[in-house]
Length: 281
Ligand code: F6P
Image (cartoon, rainbow, N blue to C red):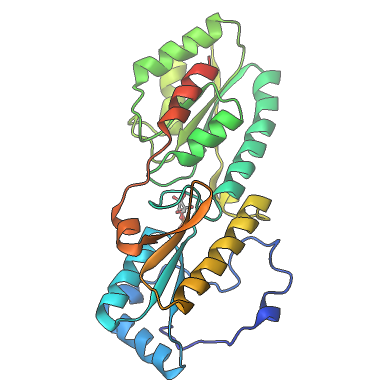
């Protein structure tokens, strides 16, 4: 928008991309759009190209930019939640989240082979920014012995206690999933040192899954969700409505005012925390 780099698209423009990860649009965070001058340029280019609405696929930052833009130029915007972190209010699932979960579970399954073959304890760090959705869900899905998330400060003592209990109960290897935004005060490498100091009987390794979580062919769930949200976004604009985010609430596609989506706080499912405490013994 800022560079005036537009390409008219039709149905055939998206041939054979449903199975691809990443973005063919190559859109990304823009520092210039954060400035009034950048947004002015964007608006002038949109008007010049007869574009009358924006569908913004992104997270909190993108939606905030969209709200400001709408406020300044009364330009119609609709948000589609797209981030692996699942940290958006007004939807149970963001695009990319389910695919990331499947990638993480597959990776942990593979790491578990080394853990159990060589009686090791693994700290596996997953993405999620400040939220623990990926860690909590993938942790349960991969049968992790402990899951450390920012929403619940487990404390170092409880972690050691839990690892001791696992050992005493006959487990020879363990997987601890740690969310990158966890607030336990130590990163995965510091936790390794801490546990090795306190429990020398453990052979500890660290694995940071990193950007593999952001790529790859989307899961069927994500493909269907993207199709549903895309249709709803366009239909909403055609009905003359704007400033909403389309999202999934109780498996129905619903509208949430964009402002609420930005200001609201997505919560991890407390029931899942309870379940993970029970099943990870
Ligand atoms: O918000 C998505 C996310 O993948 C986070 O989970 C992660 O912290 C961040 O983006 C990584 O960003 P970058 O690719 O710019 O390092």
